[in-house]
Length: 131
Image 1 (tube, rainbow, N blue to C red):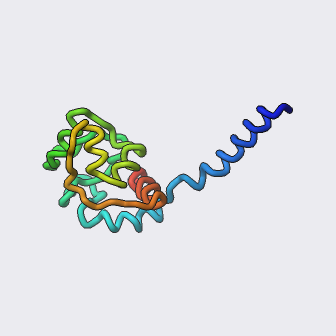
Image 2: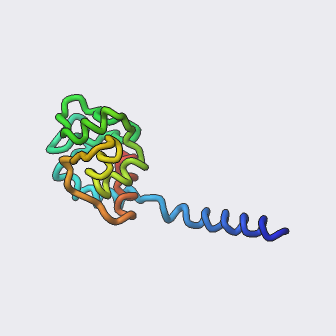
Image 3: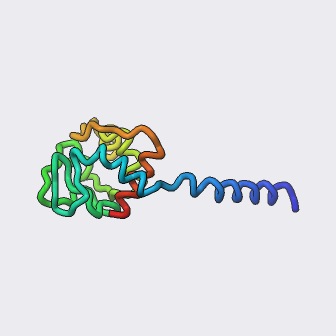
């Protein structure tokens, strides 16, 4: 086996070994979500200060019809985005920065809460995927 094939094989094995560690844990995410539950529900149709997050993964922005979204979120929605794992990973770290990036202008999110730990973000995303 030549060096290139050996290095490719080693990199592939390393990525396979790392992949499970990068996946979130829904049970841990349920505990993390308690921080979110002050403003969000996972019960369909039950909005609080923030919209219900029931079945949120894969939805288009602004999908909760009876919720009044903030101006920053509305501005980003005009550009359009899907609430997926990639979006949530960045949004949960800094909601206003993510909305500004999407909108292409300085936007603020009504959501001031931030999750800074990558494992907590992955866990809460897995929890949301299950609900």
